[in-house]
Structure formats: C-alpha cells, structure tokens
Length: 260
Image 1: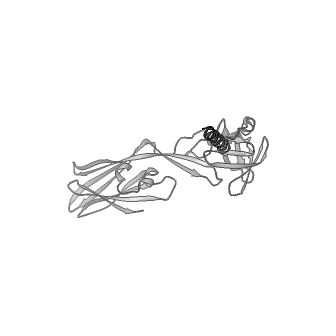
Image 2: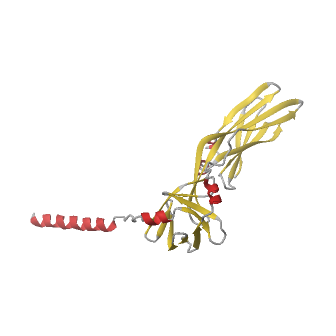
C-alpha cells in the first residue's frame, strides 16, 4: 500500500512538472514602447501613409478597413491576430520592422497635419442611397416595364485579409437587397425582394458568407420570359457568381447558375 501511495505521488509530481513546462507564455507588453509609437507612420522611401497608431489600435487609410489591436513586447510588434513584426530599429520618429518574408519596412513618423484627414472618415464605402433603374421591353406587340431598385442595408460582411506589408486588415462591407418589379401596362405581373440568402442552393456556402448581392441586370426577353442576371461578389475581389432568373409572362420564376 505504501509503495502504491509513493508511486501515485511521483506520478502527480511528473504531471505537474510537464504541465508547468508546456504552459503557454504571454508576452509582457511594453507600455513605454506603445506610447512612443503613437502617431501616423509613412514609408521612408515613398512617403505613402501606411497606418496610424492611436491608443491600442492601428488604423489604415482605407475606408473599408476596420481598426485592429496592436501591442509591443520585447523586440516584436504584434498587429491583429496573426501579424508579427521583428523590430529592427525603434526611436521616437523612426521605426524599422521586418515582416515574415524577411522584408524590411522602414517607416518614419509624420508631422504633416494634412495626413490626419485620411483617417477622419472610417465609414464603410458602400451604397448610401437606393439605386434605381428601369427598362422598357416590347415583345409580341406588348409593352413591359422592368423596375430594379438596389437597396443598401446594415447587414455586414467582414473579410479578413493581409495587406501587401503583411499586416492583418479587417474589411467590412454592407450587403444589398434588390427589388424587381415587372409590369405589363399598368398590371403588375411580378414583384419580389432578392437577398443573398436565397442563393444558398446555387452558390457554395463559404463563398456566400463572404459575398454581397452586388447587382441585378436585364439580359433579354424570349419565349420563356424575362431573363435577368444577379451577381454575388466578394467585395474588393474579382470573384463573382452570376445567377440567372427567368420570369415568365404569368409571373413564375426559375433560377439557374450561369457562371463563376
């Protein structure tokens, strides 16, 4: 019994030591270095504004980029969740940092008051008012009128990217709701609001989460009815899905994926 008790005590000690050795260490933040970095930083060679450090946040001169948290610990600048930069040189008006690719980024603190203007408005660049379009179509002697209205919403689409300097950037965009009405003379034959969630069976879910319902345009009219194409796009990217809606003359709708 005594041997068994001794064995258990030894096992507990081993586990305790292993646990202590594997515990993750949290870097100790340098408040003095963070305070020294406060201000607008520009590229030494091009004078291009790269970011502004204020409080605990880094701001970018891009109206779609959201602020990210930053801290300084030892010789490392931490930005966002994953960006790490080795600090090569750090003074009141000089900052040299090295990204993960080994590239040196040489910055100087700006003393130009005009450059503050680039950070005054960090609202998301998106539609701020309804965009309306209408199309008149003649088919088999009848006159039809198609009305499109792209309505901005407050539904956010968040995209996390890494900019050319290797820094985490969180971009936020607003989605749209698009309304389509079709009239034959004064008689309404179709009316509907389109949201991106309606395309979940046509577009991969991973793409849909990161996309906005960008636009809807009239294509043609034939014996099937009116062909209009909706586009779902990743903001700031060329990636889009095009989805065709065919509206029959009696107001029935079919949907087909056209292309990626």
